[in-house]
Amino acid sequence: RDADVLLAINVRFGEMTTDGYTILTVPVPVQKVIHVHASDREIGKIYVPSLGIQAGPNAFVNALTPVEGKWSAWTTKARDLYEATFAAPAQPSPVDMVAVSAWLRANLPEDVILTNGAGNFTVWPNKFFKFGPSARLLAPQSGAMGYGLPAAIAAKVAHPGRMVVCFAGDGDFQMTCGELGTAMQAGAQPIVLLLNNGIYGTIRAHQERTYPTRVSGTSLANPDFVTLAKSYGFHAERVDAAEAFPAAFERAAKSPTGAVLELTISPEALTPRQTLSQMRDLALA
Image (cartoon, rainbow, N blue to C red; front, side, top):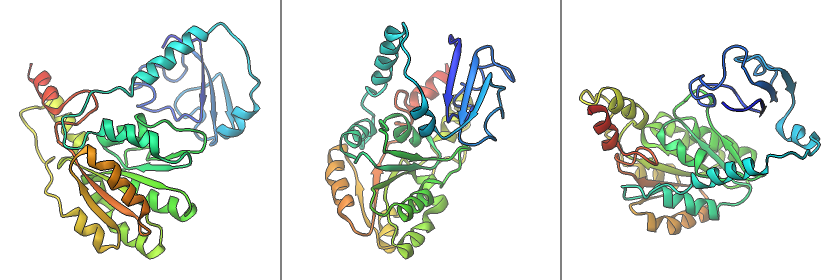
């Protein structure tokens, strides 16, 4: 909001990146915007840029000439704020995803490919993982539930030698869990982290914030995910505590037929910094 110039590299300007279209004015921002994207269809789709450049992000960055300016204090502060986002409080849940995410940051290979579908659980691969130059994230643009599993299978087909880890919610997973059969048939079996909290989390969050006394249709009766995954030839196990996750993941990584780890998540652990009960209490207040 306070910038004079924005250099947006491979950014799709949408609801999430603009804080609900409030940071930039439509269609011509107050700030000068340099929009770089691999697709010419993204440039100017929402905002008219001062300069639009069609280029892939890697090629564009490699073509830049380093410049010096008096912004070191600003960048240091911004970096410190970014690093502080990883220090979320412990989650009120059998499996604490703050602890799990910290372990994954320290132990996943540099060229890991992460995928996810849609739901509150996507905050963990999106905001609690540090992507180096070789890591990749495959995720939907428009909130497509079930995207993560087929994306992970496709990634494993394209890169059989790389570790592929899919993050899925329980409702999200059930949208496309039959694709485990595709994975088995293609011999492209990723590691799936199935965060099972027994609810459609994002929809429940909207209900609790807006209609806290009228929750409807967001509780789930789930199948036995471990048995389901094993029927497709996957290694599968249920993880009921964060302390048990590292050993379970190591077993999953050694499985030649992929793995599904069902993580027991409390419905209370709906976001990294606000519980379901806190949402409801604030709404009622």
